[in-house]
View 1 (cartoon, rainbow, N blue to C red):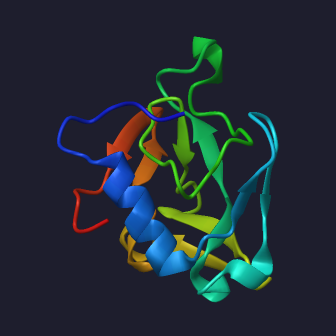
View 2: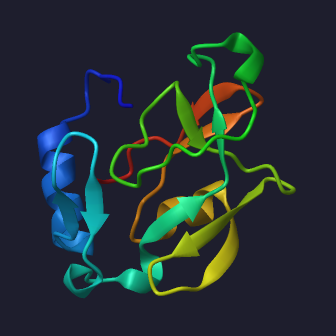
Length: 132
């Protein structure tokens, strides 16, 4: 899902995210990933589900802006899909501890998940790199 952004170091970002949130992703094969809740450091700040939408790189342009199921907090730098703040500039999030919350884009970036990739009106919007 990710595209490459020249000044972004994915290895460093992944390491820092693991340090912040925990090493909880268990990858069984290329298609199967599981989350081990007992390995999460901050389940109340780890977003697992959000409102998402197809971006301008969708395979079928008729889908641009429509809701989709693609989301991973570890990979949010994409033109294909991203978090969609479609409720008065806010998106609904479900966190690993079971609570839900409606947050604006800057609030989402301030969570431990550090969400920074969004689809707004079919186009990708990205919060600048404040940190990893």
